[in-house]
Image (cartoon, rainbow, N blue to C red; front, side, top):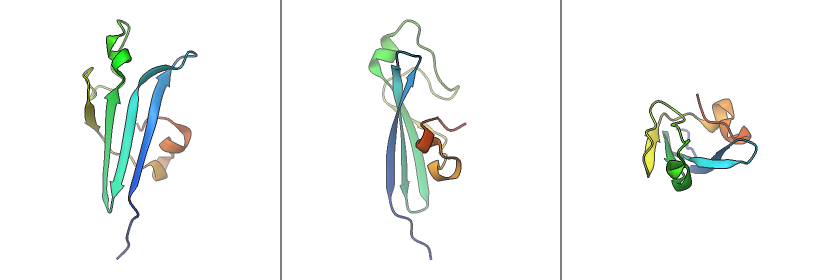
Length: 84
């Protein structure tokens, strides 16, 4: 039986040339279980021009579960993009 080393990665999501912080995405793998959660930055939520970055991520404070995507399969952690 194959064992998987635990992994925890966090990526900060920023937009625009100014690098405005939008939030952070956390990926955790423990054994065969994978989990992703996203949290909007407080300043982003206070910004009148804010928008949700995904239909399943409401404009609310705190971490929200997000569909897990392995950073090793599509490389989204390596290049800093959100999974589709």
